[in-house]
Image 1 (cartoon, rainbow, N blue to C red):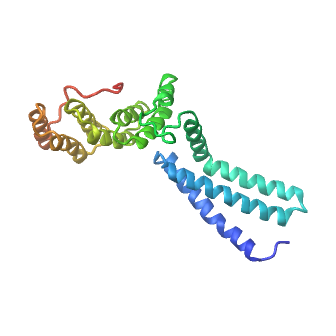
Image 2: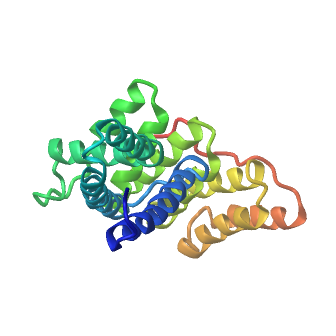
Image 3: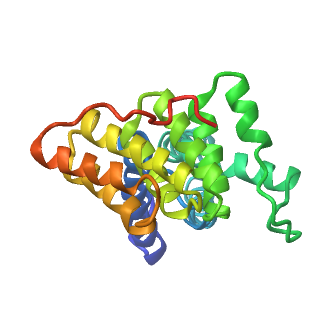
Length: 245
């Protein structure tokens, strides 16, 4: 019988953050479709490593004489880890393998690597492609192409709410008035027709005008803002489409 010693109490207390953090990460990834930061993934995997070493050591000490209970206890912890942290572990391992194959940051390479993302696109895995383009965009936040293609792939799997943050990033990083107008048009259309957010649709056009007030397109954008305020919102003449690359 296990006594109420400090190790037993600590083991029980550690299960609380283990379960709560696991449920939180699972909800963020599966419900809110949030891509976790690499630092969060690394911290979580490291914490899990030490947590399991501690728990397995105690289980072996307490239940070493009863092999059946030990096996079922270890199996229970393993199953719970797979259920709560499985998606995170898969993502972490995938990023680790990609870093081994294309060690961009390790050797100071300043060119974004799109091979993995484009391979996902070719086999029709648009959700996987979106994740890979997001990873590239986080490594190179000024790389407009990565943000646009991440957003495009999210739109292909009908996830406009996940697409708009990357269109927003591209809207702020693009240096071309023509490209920025296309992004602003796309954001305006998604916010207005897919997300029912008129204020955000207006903000997309206002952002374009703030960045390029002297552009040859500024007049037409101002007219569209006026129509938006009056409730008349025709489809943009040249919005960039779902397959824009």
